[in-house]
Image 1 (cartoon, protein in one colour):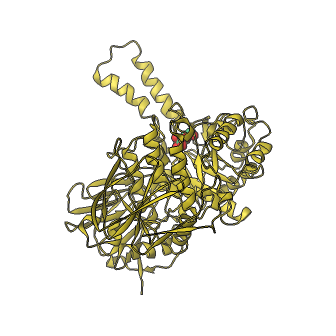
Image 2 (cartoon, helix red, strand yellow):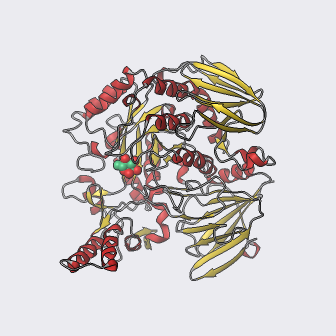
Image 3 (cartoon, helix red, strand yellow):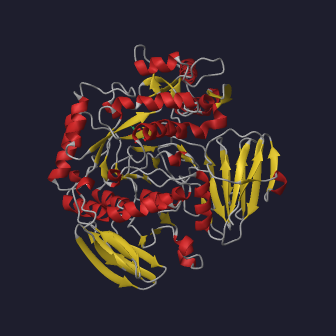
Length: 634
Ligand code: GLC
């Protein structure tokens, strides 16, 4: 009989992460060494030399989290290097040995997993009001299943959200969008969604459309829908402060924005200049903000991505005032090292500053609560605002929704994407490693910006990235303003891109079924090899391959100028090279192999006796003949 124990200290702030049952247990029975020090709760455990520690969802580094220090603190940081400690999500779930630990706590947590001392994990909660859940099961997969039952079923998007999606910051007007669709069609590359980044709005105001750039928006949405393409606009957390802008004014009049200690609205600068941040932690604000999406759903829009909701703050009025004053003081001076770098830091430190976060005040049950106590809930509550409205207005599985910031709990309302990665080869692996980790935490609909967001991509990088993206539920190519064009038709050998993306469409019946099964059974889509082969040393240490569903293993090529890679087979499998409609099979025995994979091929390994259905490729998910499948068998 499965039993989850719940240990409570103080008076925790409700996060609504947990929906299942757990047994309230006396803190005297908390099995870890702990102390309370300077308002922090610190607990620790020792790790056996070969013990693997899993978890933390969207985070830097490996699947095995040992050997680094991480922080749960939703961060708008576009440099996902291995020296970082946080990304956009705060996913407080860890597995070690036969135990899963979930810390239900919305403030900062520091996870030292063998950083200070290789054999010791020390976890610091920046506060003393929390719930900790301990889940004991025999295997990591069973721990995950029990944990996922506790936190409730993952979000399931509409079927078409499994199609290939093209994004860019930005397609500036309707003709730019038309051209993307026309060029994909001309190149005969499948496509289901085109994204509208911030420039579709009128001066970056949420729930507006720039009428010059997108005249007659309703008709435009219908025109595109008639081609079976979905337009997916972005929504940012902050609402532009502007007289006469109805959304802003209504929020202002009702007192819906995050405040400062003196009761005035907190003012931060983001894309549109100064914005008010809706206090999504309040149910009435969520309901109000959720209803605003109607402006776009009434125009035929069926999908959204929520952004800048860590929240990202470029500057605050106070911060800017201080930095400008520092600059004015130094005017005309001969700046030595200290002064010059001090000045530089005054400006560099303006964005996402701890001082600003510390000045923000939320309202919970009518009482003021400092932002730092609830930081990680902000973006998640924005997802809830939208997701709860969509479910109530349209029913389940109708609207595509994913977010940048998240916490465990928001996995029930929407998916996530992995934010502003780079067009770096190492980011193929970073994406791969996050997939099982976020699955453990309930996030199933997810993916990285394929081809990489920041900096310039090359054709081979985009192809190899796509060949991993073929398997990620969210398969979206996205890149930043000012970077090289990254749509598939921009590169030479366009047919290579067609070959790879057609494989996605051929696999959609299988991938969709695997996704649904994982959602409905609180299971993972992607698993580390060590979950399935716990006694196999090479499988345990493998961080470049994943198990997919019950049938497959994936092993993308992740290095430039490599015509293949080394792959470890933990059992006999058949190596399939899928490319357009072509399928090549090669049975391989357990062990290490060098496999050759051309740029237009997707490698897939199928276990002996297992089968995967392939349907004919189609240019849209709506045109897929999902019942016309041929099976490939390992
Ligand atoms: C943020 C998002 C990115 C988007 C950009 C402009 O950086 O993460 O995806 O393109 O903002 O809206």
